[in-house]
Length: 173
Figure 1 (cartoon, rainbow, N blue to C red):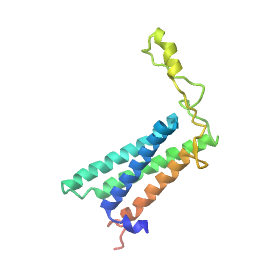
Figure 2: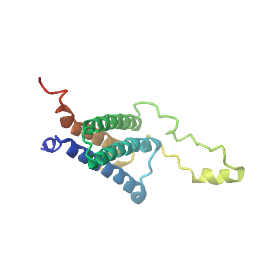
Figure 3: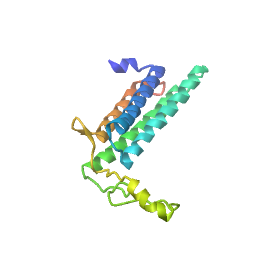
Figure 4: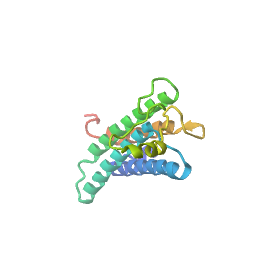
């Protein structure tokens, strides 16, 4: 079973690092090669993946110089970050299902204008500006990308639990 594989902190870190990298690469492939335009909430949901990759890359560097005492700390921070990612995805799913109001940056009625734009360039910049509505889900195999993000984020949190639970703080005395 996969949870026996990830009881080692080093293997857990590597598994989470690879998983987050695959998710980001997939998001950019969908965007640049298949025309999936990300809305503002989609872009916010990428941030936790970048944070986790950064944290686990620092952990990898520490491992290379034989500093291994921070493994569980970095896995815990990564797990908390991915829990936040699942919250963002759940919020986005709620927007898609019209459970709650759309934030102002996602509504199709708003246009952000940079104050430094010269009047002559204003029309040109408005034509180039794309405002993607967060309540219009982009789907693959019947599920929105926010739904996939929710399940992947939760899976990564669950994946880190066996490693975190085997620490001395959770062992019977």
